[in-house]
Length: 278
Figure 1: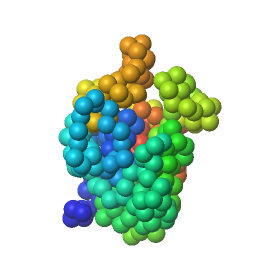
Figure 2: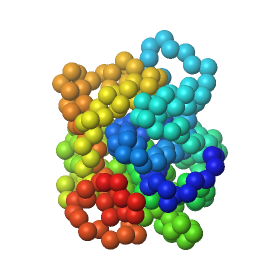
Figure 3: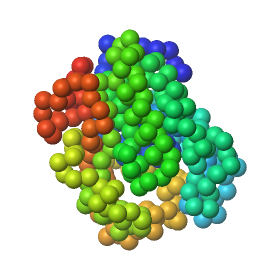
């Protein structure tokens, strides 16, 4: 880890996700927005995605975890944020790639162990705002569920830290219509379970000014964005719908707060938070 800094000097946003590429889909535009406004932005990634599926025909990678780590570093540069922190767990995989017997795969690790690691990172970087997956993990991936549980627990348990802990916890939020879009694109999910009602969305971020940053971050994850990926197999109509929805806005719900909420919906992630940078 890098040297601690005085959190009073700049507001700090910490985004906590499971795999390389989670950040680009879920919060990429928001991270760029706040980085440009002078907020310290720190991405925490639980694993290196080594059980992912290479989606480029004919591509051979000797060490997929190492490759995806480099892809994430490139994506962070595209988003104009510092290099990520890795928690050094392993990707649990999915389907035939599920790693049942790997003791470091996130599916085999207790959330409390992950929480302990996150507490140390939070204590060092002292974020005012913490962002992670929603309780359904976006589309239900076990690693997403695990990081939600651990990050949520860490938000509540770090209130005893000398600096007071993060003041606000946000979850990424798909509204029901966006969840229907994912379902149409092949994700096996019930939109009314995985999506949230409009009045659950606390922050609607217009990230259209950072569209090119987000596109570049997605492109950086080359092993995952090839012709055999879900994105690569979309029709042009589906791709246009996805780009309009995903590249133009990012939504968040409230996971926890230590400060009063005076506006609804909120004007931004730092609305009502000390060191406010709406």
